[in-house]
Image (tube, rainbow, N blue to C red):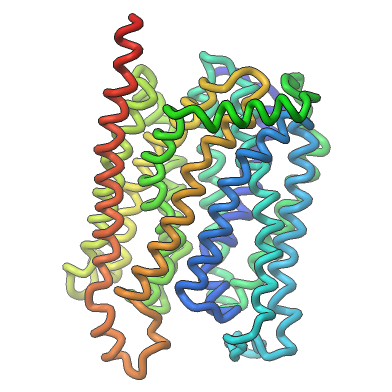
Length: 450
């Protein structure tokens, strides 16, 4: 097995804690916004989509800044902001409790203030988390590039992606037990859990992150701006980002649509946290195997395989309505959702590590943070588009039951709830076909050169 530096392992451990914190909160962010703060489906989708989008747009700039000031300082800033932001999200409903926003007793109940502007105090708290998280997005993946060689890079990114998904799995595992114990109050107190994890990560970076690879530190502002202009005008990378955005639009529904979809259709006993955990579990088990299996293949070949799996996953998710009664002892919506998420996870194994590797190989020395930050532009676009589509489609095909006087009226309004996944299957198919065209077009200059 290849040897990696202490900085490599410390960065990956910090990524583990950050992902635990992020996914513990993000898996229920729309429920926190709706059930605790009283936002509608569309409002909650817009806020969470902008939050997620900003988290993936800002790395382009924070990555360039990190190249200049150094990764260690940037990581310490990042985890300070993350801890502060999560604590703010935890305190906000408690502060507003006196105004009747939430009531604590045997059960937590939302009590009103749907028209109150005070609930918008959640926005600055989420901005603090967003800025802190944007540093992590660029720095950790760039650290992998700096701390590996061309021979160990693919393996290094598979380790990195495995740590991401271990953190994702653990973080999502926390919410359902909390929800069983304290009801909707779990959507509030999970933020305290995440804040503590970020403090632990801060201490780990402070004590153990020391890297000898400091290329790019101390560069001038002019050099930073020149690098930004150069990467923004790289048409080949921009087109690839737009194509892979389709994959992430479907993948974003694990958080944008799935929690509300399964609770509304399979019942309040559904456990969206455990269902979502199927994704990181499969990735952890399979990502190294897939990376080794595709090691002799080009990065674009591996990405293309994953792109054709993603529309199939959406069609499987849509098929839950075809079954009556329980399926394998569970609600059919739950079973087919799990099956679709397995396919999504396999698609991720083929796409994400090789995608990051591809971008790292385009980066000049000392600009790894900039280029790896730029690679997250697909997630920015998919967050805005994916969450926006989710809010519209949920409101149309699977609306909030609280808006209807009777269960029968709601069932009639949500009879075609599975159509949501047909829309996302269409997005996936178009993206997969576009990638085939892209691969053929971009291979021609290389063939002519040879």
